[in-house]
Length: 157
Image 1 (tube, rainbow, N blue to C red):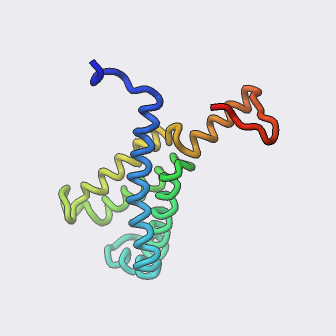
Image 2: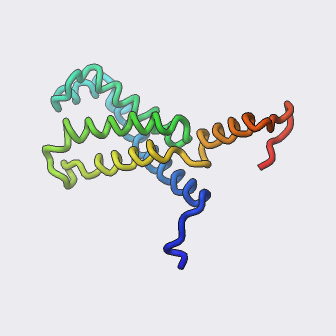
């Protein structure tokens, strides 16, 4: 039965692309809001009011990590590194902001926990084939196997 069949490499790569793009879009939105709507100074102030240590440093760092690591996830570029930064971001969000609100939203940590889980999955699985990381890996393998294209030639897929 098809429900119990293992996924193909193509199916896994599609699933990873969906996960990367979805999670990346969420982080881009939150990072852009912090950078462009609130401003880095105000984010630092909000972090201070929430009791986050080194708020003047961590506020801007978190805002920029969310924005740029989110973009990296959407593109599938340096996916594991971007996902690591976002996982650490979510651990901090859970620890310093949401844990005291319990599990459930609106003040709880369930959303940050889901983003943490998605980020951890991307750390372990990587970007998949439909990504810049996948293209670079494929290109590196091709070059290592001596399949160098001459300048101007197209790589057969």
